[in-house]
Amino acid sequence: MGIVIRQSFWSSVSAYIGVGIGYINAVILMPLFMEPGEIGLVRAVTSIALLLTTFSSFGTGGTIIRYYSILGSTQRILNQLFTFAVVTILIAYTTLAFSLLLFEDSFFDFFEEKSPQLGQYLVLITMLVLQMAIFNLLEFVVRTQKEIIIPSIIRDLCYKVLHMIVILFFGMGLIELNEYIHSISIIYLILLVLLGVYIRHKRPLKLDFTFFTDINLLSNLYRYSSVGILTGLGYILMLQIDQVMISKYLGLNANGIYTTAIFISVAVEIPNRFISQISSTLISDAIAEDNMQSLKDIYQNASINQLILGSFIYGLILINLENIYLLMPNGQSFLGGWWIFMIIGLVKLMDMVFSTNSEIIAYSRHYKFNLYIMLLLSILSIILNYMLIPIYGIVGAALSTMISYLFFNLSKYLFIRVRFNLIPFTLNTIKGSIVILIVVCLALHIPKLENIYADSIFRSLIYCGVFIVVIYILDISSLFNKMIIDMINALKLKSD
Image 1 (cartoon, rainbow, N blue to C red):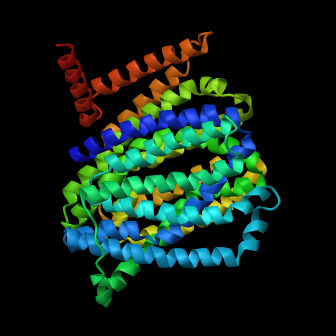
Image 2 (image 1 turned 45 degrees about the vertical axis):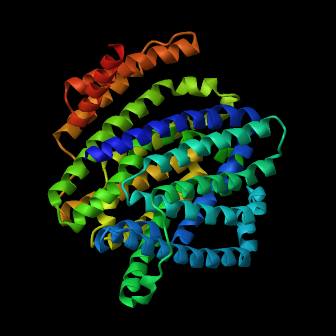
């Protein structure tokens, strides 16, 4: 698990720098220069593109990770899997692009009532889909080598910096809203070039069509990928359907408020994103070697460490959330997002505590279960959004996400418990949950100072100090304690 923590730690560092820049973008600059409806339009375009990217990717990312371990983990195998993925993505994308153009009127009609502006960006969305699909493919190629640091820097840090430049151009009047939205495609093109250069320098890829001469193997690859696309579609649908339906039923203004709160909550799940990325390769190796002890260690260590890191971030944001909105330009227009962060932040924490459920199922012989549960989840998510959004507005969208995720995680937990006799929780999970709940609740009652900046610093220092000391003394996570000791030793060396 050491490689997981090291890679995840440094990736998280770059990601949190990116989150800091992203905070400036989404919470300060965008509300300063844009109306909520304009923000909602930008978010809706990217959300729809992400949703459609699942079709173009056709589940090839998971196929690369799984079969790279099974077939031998050599450069030749990687070249063949890469070639398989490229051909598959190009075929899937061509089919999708043709379908979008064929049913262009239906796309316009879907958003006509509340968000008619979306229809004019169909071509841009189609372009973004291909760029996102290729970028995702290159990321999976790098992950086979248990490397996530550079891709995370490119995706999280470079994207946020480039996005900031575009927002500033818009704020200074150098570009119009339409040009700003189209610049998203230029940003992704730059990211693709950067990641491509890194791969060429680190591990050059060559096209190798050998797999297309082995009908049996090719059939297995497409069978696994077809399950992957449906599973991935369900997952992306679960993540993005709320934004799409808010745009349809409530309009772009509501979507701007909702997505701004969602962005704030993204910081909570960053440790989960990187631990899962690097763990996926280790899990695939453990399953291929039938090493259940290794699988158990990864499963339980990921759960407790994600609980601690995620809870720390969630609590830190929660006790400062009112100040965050007060510091936002036009913050009064976005105050409706307070409850959204409260709910979605808890959803992300819940997902982290249940650990690497999806990865264990995906790389085992029971991988089809993810498909079945995702299909049920997608249907449930659509029904809940359809029922709750008209009644409770954006809070209804957040509640539908919470209910869907609870069903999703409980189903996977029970399946793994029965099939693998594994559970992600230990006694430390219970102890840690109780302690964290108490610390966060007490932090919410810290006396408020008049100066908003002094108040944020004051309550953050108290919360961080108490949280770290209590978790360290109770020894809830040996890896967390080791990280604290390593930091203390590093500071001592610098002072000497």
